[in-house]
Amino acid sequence: MKIKLEKDVLTDNNIAADYNRELFKVNKTLVINLMSSPGAGKTTLLERTIEKLSCEFKIGVIEGDLATERDADRIRALGAKAIQINTHGGCHLDARMIAKVLPEFDLDEIDILFIENVGNLVCPSGYDLGQDHKVAVLSVPEGNDKIPKYPTMFNRTELVLLNKIDLLPYLDFNVEEAVSDLQGINPSSRLIALSATTGEGLEGWFNWLREAYKNV
Amino acid sequence: MKIKLEKDVLTDNNIAADYNRELFKVNKTLVINLMSSPGAGKTTLLERTIEKLSCEFKIGVIEGDLATERDADRIRALGAKAIQINTHGGCHLDARMIAKVLPEFDLDEIDILFIENVGNLVCPSGYDLGQDHKVAVLSVPEGNDKIPKYPTMFNRTELVLLNKIDLLPYLDFNVEEAVSDLQGINPSSRLIALSATTGEGLEGWFNWLREAYKNV
Image (cartoon, rainbow over all chains, first blue to last red; front, side, top):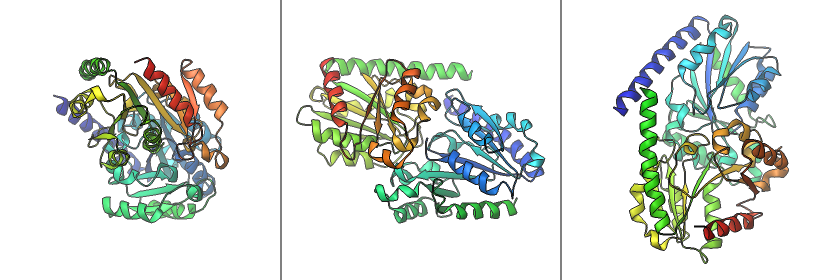
């Protein structure tokens, strides 16, 4: 019975995800589902991305959090459109939540839509939102063991952004080991090391987005 | 239908939690359910705790992770008994998983049992494991906004251990604001600031455990 219900939930989600995907395709909107542990730096990364790329692309953001409008407010302060979804205890966004807020965007006018998922390295990875790409942010203070310990996240993401490399001098983190662990778990995935605080490595992420946009 | 099933799942969990609680009480075992985001430093904190307190208390550990035996191996290396539970994608431990592994401990011989939950700031908080105390670890690099953004965790924990205070000079984190946010969300909760790496503040945590053990 439990398995049947879970199947139903995922079937419903996948129908909504397909609907979202079709809408994104028609409007030529590149959609990124950004996932990470709490505090890995997703919102700061989006702030830097909007600052740099808003002259090249029209950017929209959907923010997922259990509570508060804090993240959406940070994005709005930079002049980008942001919609906050509060899950009220829910551990991930699903495709129906996304479908529900899409009418608030003029998608035809949005080149890149970022969906910042709930901070959680487990649950969000299992739900297709209709995105073009799933991107995980891993931060240096979380430690090297997160890639092998959270395989359901890292074997489903095409790109891992290793954030907070400005803290490498103060912590015991081995970047080569992270690259090698990621290769072992997901050979088609790529890792870009960067710091949203200092700006180091951000150009690699911006170029990845530019390439991804060409293929929409 | 969905609501009914969730109720059933929680009812089953609570029956198992009550069973565990009775077993802990009979054996005079203090049980701590330790929760946090991935990489907040739960295992390192347990390593330091075992090193310091193993002459005062017999300590056992249950480790919860999606995959690998890494955390249990780290605990065993210090000579403490550790059982690893792999959830294979599951985002939290539940009371039945705990009940299933308890026969592997000689509880009569264990003074303090730590249950290190899956690294996740959302799901674990909803499941009673039969523990005496729920303790959350929050780490400085995660940022000040985690307490208001994850209320379902922080309004259910009696104690918050603010870890990695050795990184305060390099990050924008305000300890007073964290204390004030916690008071706002959960007036009966307490915060102890510490660093499992440098040892600063650990004595407060050890004393809290000594007091908690007196009340078992």
